[in-house]
Figure 1 (cartoon, one colour):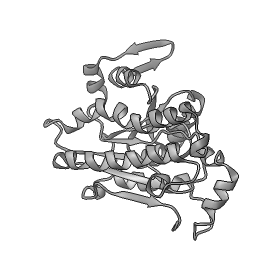
Figure 2 (figure 1 turned 135 degrees about the horizontal axis):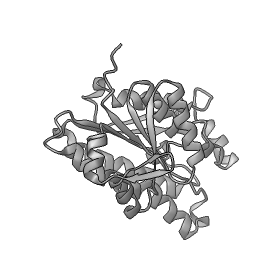
Figure 3 (figure 1 turned 120 degrees about the horizontal axis):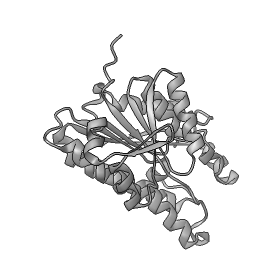
Figure 4 (figure 1 turned 60 degrees about the vertical axis):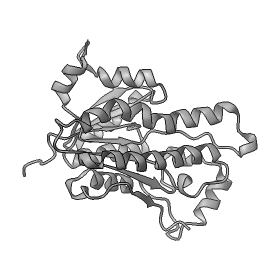
Length: 267
């Protein structure tokens, strides 16, 4: 069967594990070429790429710090292609020749630094805001211009990862909730700006998903959150990956500016 998505390339940030890995692998299974981002976890990112290859998909790795604007610009503009021991630095024009304009971006990477508001340190607030919210601008700004160019007739897909914390707010997550609520507002505004170019922008707001990040939540807070879930279980990363892959598809072309919660019926 012909792969209808063979010429569509997708960047997934935070692809080294958890939800990001699931989004990357599921997209690759659907035939997209996946550029898997990581920052400090190269070994885990290589595991993601190995899963993609094992599933019959294709992709590559890219490293940059999403909270560092200049690093994002440099790495996105100059993808490093590693072949044996030789590193070739591609100019922006060469990158376009290699990859073309991206079809999709899944902006997923993020961190938590949980504490009560009065217990937060300045670094806790700054690190979460810089990583989770500033990355919206840092990652998307260098890429959106190409996607929105008049030369790009096919449109594209942008998917951002928020959280139920950004929708409802969670105790002990004031910084995280602020960053994820900001992503919702920014995504809705960008959706309006890009709709005329055939580019959809949607937000996924996961609830409790079985990942390493969730396991780091304070047990008392975790139990409190679980008590609000009628399905009485945590979600699976693959369930988020299945949704993000649908939102990448042509079938989702009329869905934009939406916040889709995946939370087991959380109340």
